[in-house]
Length: 273
Image (cartoon, rainbow, N blue to C red; front, side, top):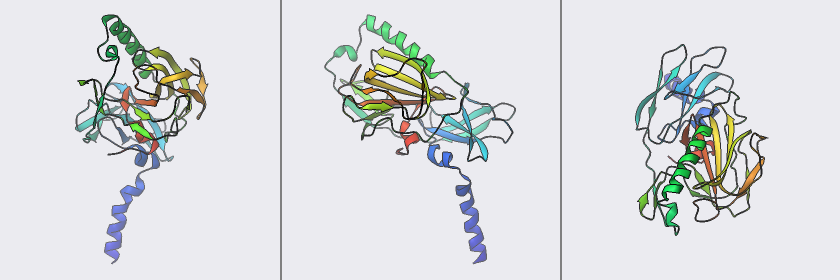
């Protein structure tokens, strides 16, 4: 009996050793997040994935961890992060199957834009890419994020989308089914780094939460913040709408880590394997 009790204790130890953030965020699949333990040292280690700096925090005051965004394009298998002054640390990426969604749009221009609009889209994409690539030194105020609106999820992250039968980029965020005019709140404290009215995204706000963790909110009917504004957690940044390429009012929320769009459901405890 003593031996059995000892073995059960040993089996339980790895689970108990995992901190809150690891249990919440470690969903290492394409489009997910990997939590990787880092070498112990007095200061936060500097780590990079695919050449880009990653978010590093103390977990439960015990150990340094890297919170790594995994792009949807990454195939299942072994990946690694580079750590300054140490050997590369491997981690495994598992598989996840994403559903399909077929959408019919009356405006054919939103499926196959004209050359003039393609130039606009290219310009707007470059602007948004720069915002995603920013890496500020501050630690996010919270990593268990608040929902920007209260409402049911109407479309999940990673869904393969077909507009009028033609496949386009997978869905890069979460959609919430809420009425037009619903206040949209910051899920964590942050700085407004980009505001725009874009061809696909409509009225859009980017919020930098720190260390490459960025939220993007689009299809807004109204924007209630200004560029450079520091927002506390829960601040209203805009109102739900249907601007840009949208079939009706809803809240679309992107989360980006180290310039990789990842499933926001991970950060609100709503991830589905």
